[in-house]
Image (cartoon, rainbow, N blue to C red; front, side, top):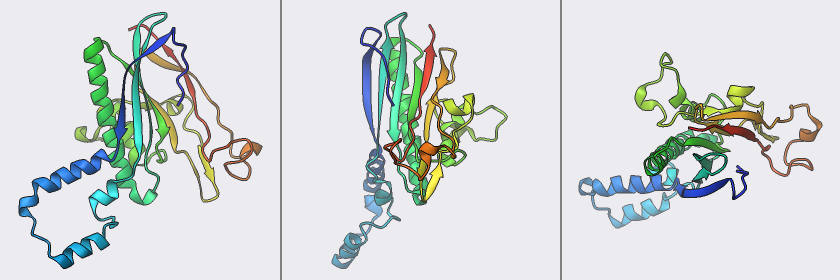
Length: 244
């Protein structure tokens, strides 16, 4: 995601990095706390453990995916002071590990919620939030539904503890509907990339980048191609930011 602003209009006030392998550290910490209940391995058991070190039934192995996210807070200087948090991420790709993607999504929003609270307290403001990236999740699946669950209406059947800690809505969905696809390859064609925004009177989408139709010649023969150098199409939006 690209944030376009001249240095005279906005300044970076804070930033942080999200390491999804931190989830592995939490699993290891839990394992250490339960060490008193574990038996001592024999030499043969230790060998079997090393042999099965890539066993996906092991939560440490399952969660270690080397995916990351970044987040930064920008203070608009002109024409008025307002803070916007911008975050970008790439979640794990494998559809067989949907639980890993969901765990990453939950960790992402927990970190964003914490970062937003810190910015709110330090600068005494209500920051707007933009989140974009390749979520490797299609509309309506577990990850997508979780990301927008914080903006669910009270009547919707979602348990309170299962709601996301920050309200978000998809910019494309609320303007013209999710695109038919953002990824187009011989084995898979669907939407995986999104721009989410915190619903607020302080920030409103005013335009979005239109994506080609499936019949468009520039996606004929799948991606990447001469028109699109990636197997993902670019998505984009412009926003109007209002005074708090």
